[in-house]
Structure formats: C-alpha cells, structure tokens
Length: 273
Image (cartoon, rainbow, N blue to C red; front, side):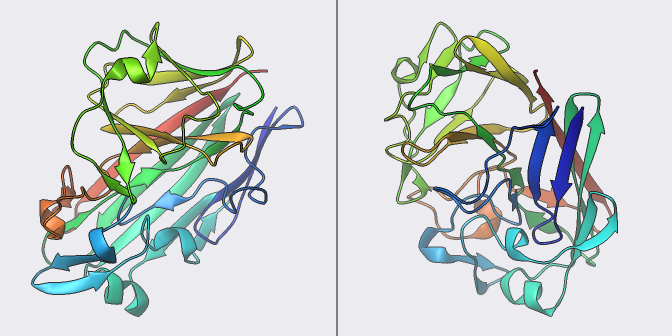
C-alpha cells in the first residue's frame, strides 16, 4: 500500500512509503528538502534579478512558492494565492494549486495555475522530487522509455545554463545514464528534446520506479555529491542562461497564460515493490 504525507509549507510532499518502506529522501541529511514545488521560476535568475514590465524584481532560486505557507483545501490538496508578499517579487495575480493523488502504487502530482489578473501572466513551473537511491555505493541507472537519438544535454555554470549542447555519449550508454559518484560534480544535468515520456530508475538491476513526465519540456537530474538520493525533475522551462538579457518574458519556454485562464499539468510516479 502506498502512503504519503504532505505539509502546508510549500505544499511539499515529505514522505512516500510503499508497504512501510520509505521511498523519498528524508529532507535532513545532505539536503533539507524532499520535493519542492518550483514556481514562478525554475532555477536561478541571472544576478538574482529580472525585468518585468520595466521594473526589476528579485527572486531566489526556484522561486518563492516552496517557502510559503499554502492554504489547505482538502487532504493532500493546497492553494497559494497572490498576496502583498508575492507581488513584491512577482507582479502578477495568480492562484497556484498543488494536489497529490494515489492510485494503487502510482502517485500523481498535479499543478494548476489560474490567472487572476486583468492581463496575461508569464511564469515558470517545475517539480523537484528526491528519491532514495544510493548511487555512489550501488549500481543506479536512469533508463529511457524510448530510443533517445536527438536528446540534448546541458550543464550549469554558477547555476546558469551554458547554452552549448554537450556530447550525449558523455552521459548515455545503451539508452541509459549511469549515476556514478562524480556525475553531479558540476550541479544538475538538464535534458531537452526527449523522445521518451517516461524514465525508469534502476538500482542493482531492479526497477525502483517509473517516472512519467508527459507534457514537460525538460527533464533534469540532480543530487549532492555522495548523497543517498537522486532528484528526477520535470520542468516546463529552465534556469536563465549565462548570456541571458535579464528580461523575464524572453526566458526560453516561459509559460504565458491569458486572463482568467488555467494551466494544468501533472507527473506520475509508479513505485515498484
């Protein structure tokens, strides 16, 4: 049986157990989070600032939602509504809904953004769940659902994307990424132009989980050096590039939503016994 725990702060998922076995990072050792929600940016802004409607706004890495108290709607369902604090950092009126649903051994994480403004809003959105997988001590791999002939890999420099595509053979072999102890030495690995909608996390030749990120444009993986977890991160857009002009609307793949419209997306994780 799959059981979860969530909290109001950041509408964060903090525990996933399957038949009593914990599947999620403990949020204590190496990294103090479990599965933060990334909104209204993914990653960093260049110099921590961005230009929106001719005004400069400042936001920390991955935005402010992960550190704010959401309103609980029902069990494992939350909403964050714009307020005076959010408007200082992000000048748009919005509602961000986050909910978690269990279907047998599958966990669905659902996001919905509602534009409550009188004009279009623009934003970033992504997930950041951390799964137990001691990749530095055991044989951990990420296997792709489909053959990835055109996948693009990107690395970070001081938290910003270096726009030059990297040779995929540096990361992939036989349609898998081996999670060796040095793989995250330069921070996260970012992937784009994927053919797959799913990846499989494998430890010691046994599938731990199936991750369905259908609809997301990017997939990133990340961990701390020698940490016993790996984050599989579905993103709609990404951190600023090192040559970013600092204008928010010019961010690659930024989402735009008309007044009174809604944007919804979800990702699904099927845990294996």
